[in-house]
Length: 91
Image 1 (cartoon, rainbow, N blue to C red):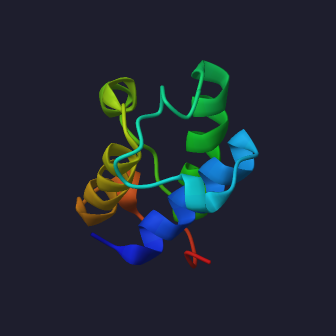
Image 2 (spheres, rainbow, N blue to C red):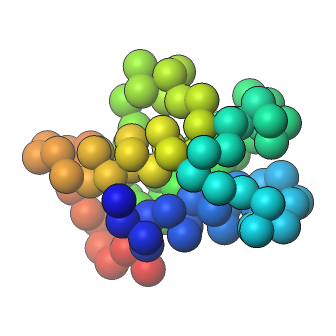
């Protein structure tokens, strides 16, 4: 698992929910962090923009934990095709 991807997910989630980054782990459930549908959209928009990718809708609907978000991003980055094509640097 990429530490860079996990770190960005933790930071983005902490910013969206206004919680300390240390209160988030890979095994945190989004429901336990009180992530609602608007939070999810905000979070995923930021992550897709940062990593220059688009997560498939069916994947997005299945996300329930922080680990699943990290894995979805890593899998999309590793997959060939336009969804994972970098548009520039990954900051």
